[in-house]
Length: 257
Image 1 (cartoon, one colour):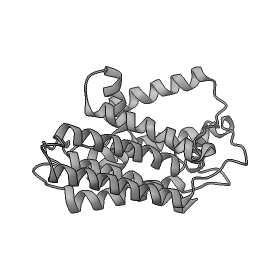
Image 2 (cartoon, helix red, strand yellow; image 1 turned 180 degrees about the horizontal axis):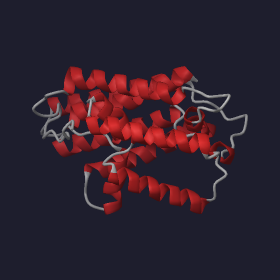
Image 3 (cartoon, one colour; image 1 turned 45 degrees about the horizontal axis):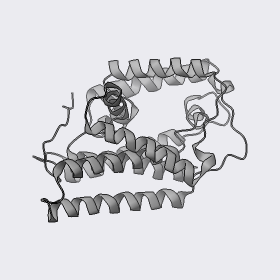
Image 4 (cartoon, helix red, strand yellow; image 1 turned 120 degrees about the horizontal axis):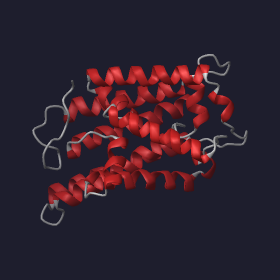
């Protein structure tokens, strides 16, 4: 539904903004997966673990909503995944980095990247007949809006507790631990936002990308609007031009080129 898409997008934007405010880093799923693949100690690995935990938790809460239905064989899916990995590496970011963080910060390269990957996706979905490869049973359950609202509340509460402990008893709550917990919480919340907004379902994404479809849906647009607006509010009101993150440490934000 459109309300779920909008609120799910807001959860995505909240996690991106909170990460910038609290630890001074941009949120990017591709970067987290790349750090994990390199097997080098990094806070991004904790974020990747959070992404997995969020997907598992969402699947436990509502089993049907986390399932993906596609007629593609596994070897084709693997090849598509490799192409996505190469593209995000060459483009220095994925939809979470360029689409949510980059657009919020008015990054010129992100505007170009979003235009290119949405344009090529629309062409592929509209002219390539990809929707015929996706199946979805009629009894697929949706992610309740109340769940999304509750998740937002829990994420805010947990991040608030982490911040309060770091400020009140820094000697017992070191910087590395605080940053790692924020990475995990924002990763978990971001993953649940993707599932809750419907972006984990190929059929929902393709209904937006295929403009020739009779049942065209603007759900993905609502997700992006909710994410960009929420992240922009958090970033520009609290995180922009800070000398250091709220929890301490150094700011590691890329330029808005």
